[in-house]
Image 1 (cartoon, rainbow, N blue to C red):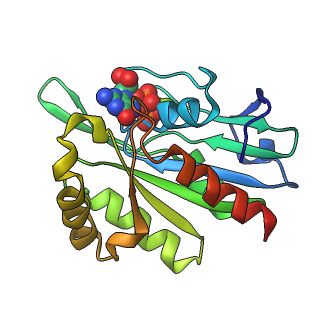
Image 2 (image 1 turned 180 degrees about the horizontal axis):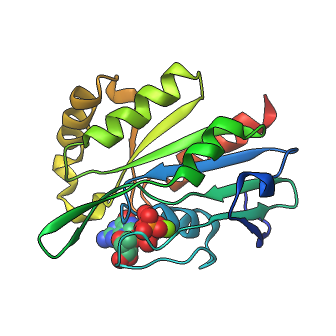
Length: 192
Ligand SMILES: Nc1nc2c(ncn2[C@@H]2O[C@H](COP(=O)(O)OP(=O)(O)OP(=O)(O)O)[C@@H](O)[C@H]2O)c(=O)[nH]1
Ligand SMILES: [Mg+2]
């Protein structure tokens, strides 16, 4: 699929702001895992705000692609170190979105290829599975490891998450590894 156009549409801060018709793809994962960078790299445009500070995306941001479907950048989850304390980052807005959205075609769940998935990642995957939400797991930041090790890291993540390695696609927002495969998945979903 070719990205012809992409523009910021609107943001949601509460569930009554959610859009109720059309087609959406959403992106979930630990804060700082690279969701906004993933969106930007797919679109070939710096449209979603990225940051090295965890918890950057607090609202739900909608982007309109090819005047036909939307990307939904969701707040991340995880633990944020503040001094000696670990503060849980968990967005009830993200939870409400997953519960209430009517337009979701697929969730891309991002994990860092270098790290074992967290308990929160496992909870997220269980949630998607239980609610029969189609998903694809994206193991991002693949540029940070040697090419020859990518397959092994994917296998480790698959084992931890108890899914087949086929359900996981290695990705890099820097090198654009597998960008065409992700766009193919989206195109297929739209045409179903
Ligand atoms: N090397 C490398 N760095 C990446 C990649 N993807 C993201 N990053 C970096 O990781 C940091 C976090 O990226 P974001 O895209 O802002 O992460 P996010 O998941 O949207 O974070 P929140 O909005 O806080 O939940 C930034 O410094 C990015 O430049 C990647 O594929 N490779
Ligand atoms: Mg973000």
